[in-house]
Length: 195
Image 1 (cartoon, rainbow, N blue to C red):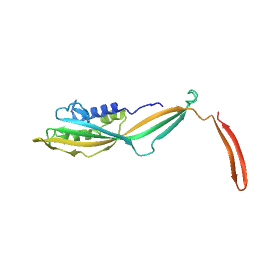
Image 2 (cartoon, one colour):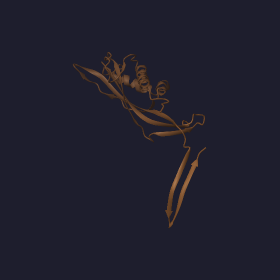
Image 3 (cartoon, one colour):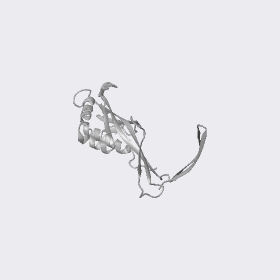
Image 4 (cartoon, rainbow, N blue to C red):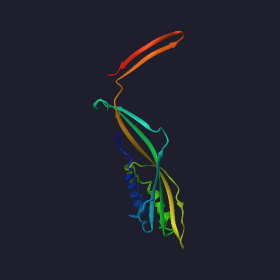
């Protein structure tokens, strides 16, 4: 088995962090959720990736090709392509709960940036195809003695993963047996050889 273009989570993670940093202006203050690195000072954002899980449609799609120039036993290529879906959950944390620097306002900047081709191209280069943009949820809450601005947004992306193996073609097929019906029987003994 041999992978041609493996699904690269490091490339996906880097592309998503870069997108959020650029769209929000929070350079160096966007981190992957669920890690042990220290929390950046506010304002900051987290990116959490859930999945992959099978997307709709046939699973997997099989693409078959033949190449007579390949060595014997490797003439047939079977490629299994799996369409999968990722959910990317973004969260912003700010000291402000309203106004231009609030978590909700920063999230709105990020969401509207998804309408730009210059935003989508690097995401596509990492293998991500945007299929759904959710609602922005204002989750501001009291933290100790003051409010903390919080906002959340879920994005859904389609990704394709594939694996390829090479095998040979069937050289010959043999059929033998007896077929009976209507009081008669016929014995079959046949070999078909390809070439």
